[in-house]
Length: 325
Image (cartoon, rainbow, N blue to C red; front, side, top):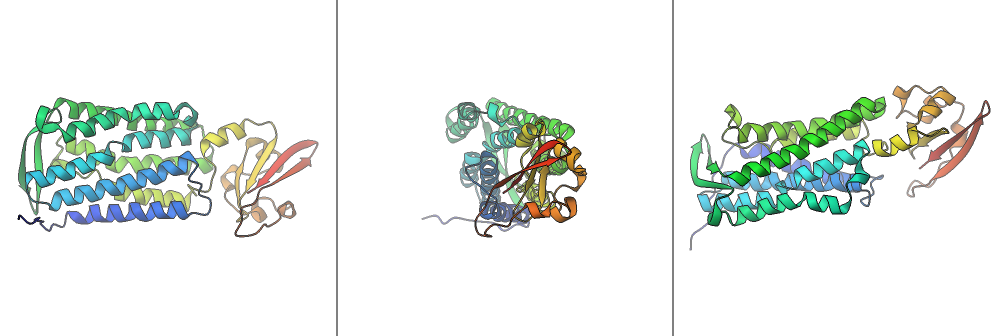
């Protein structure tokens, strides 16, 4: 009976780090006090983090495994999740940019058809060679990698994935241009998170120098996750309301404030900023700092239970609504 053989390489470190950070972030998002997994934006973030971890682990084992058959097995496992990353990214970008309602479950299902076809073609590639041919293992320093002559459907799959990623980036760029300052940090963190793995993938597919042999796409998620951590803790990626909700609220004639249970003003529409003299760049600060005359309007609830209060405010003959959640 043949035993499974592995080889040790320092190349595994970035992939191991990437997988660990992805899983830890997924756990953090799930356990975050304001997380609702029924919300599609949050659920998509969790799914993307889990898929990133799965891709990193699969590629790690592909690197350390020995032999063509063993490596191709891990390639198939990679495709089980990696193909869905571009779809998930587009869904997340659309949700944040205010276009989530256009991606109905049926349309999302249609978007997943090509990744599913690609996975099935990888599984059956020895029959048709539509994904690649002439597979061999070559040495790349301290690690052995697969060298393949890519087939026609591989480039169809890559082109399809790139189109979805670029559409998502375009939506976020539009959102960045049109959104308020508090949301720009969120958008920049999300857009920046896709750059590192995208660059790694482009470098590998088009055989560009350093990226030509070891595919650093999944390792790029380590840097992407650093940006997500920065977005979560610096720009409250999980606390501030998504842009899709803000677009609706910003068009209201009435003033609208949102104060979270940590007594931070996390959103104020233009009417509220005008009515209360709020500087939009100060959003995310405490009620005491932003609304020193209105702190008595917000009554603390039980710490363990989310509460929601709506308070009607009238100043200078104009109406406003304050929500505490």
